[in-house]
Image 1: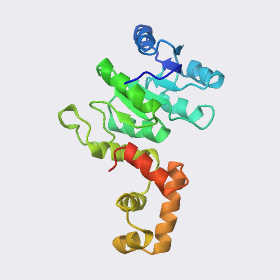
Image 2: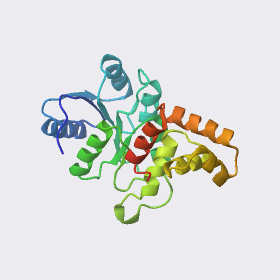
Image 3: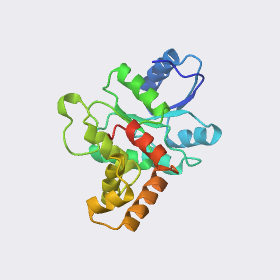
Image 4: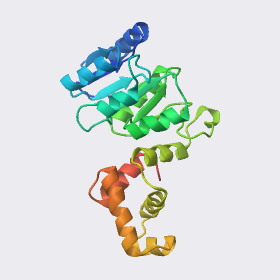
Length: 220
């Protein structure tokens, strides 16, 4: 796995020893990059106003606030550079993190290799959920993430309704609007509305781009 070129990375964690260790690890992985440190919510938001970081590795609990509050107040519209690195594996927190805009969620108990993979995936704008992490209350089997967990994360992230999820599945199967309407027992006009809403929520302007993002998130 090739290292990206120069990056600007923010590390936000209230614990000095862990923060310093992570900074050293990142410097070793990405020697041409600039690493910035934030000790709490206020410091992280200030860096967000000063920089346009490629990656934000953020602890869930930031002392003066939490990652959710930071993402709600984050300057600009982009939040897909956030990678949550925390001790908390509660599925509710995972769901809230993806709804807030984070692309990655990794536990601090994970091996360094998994964190490095997560970084590369988030930099490539792909979802990454680490071992022992799931957005559902179903247990992760044998420490491995099930494809269903990635699907749930995708649907939560883009706030797709149950019907939009069904339509997306039919689109990925290659069905036309007419065929989708017949399969789901709805009108073709309703299918068109759902398709437009899905494109808008995912942030693309055509079906080809939608399918690429869906396949990148391993929904097929």
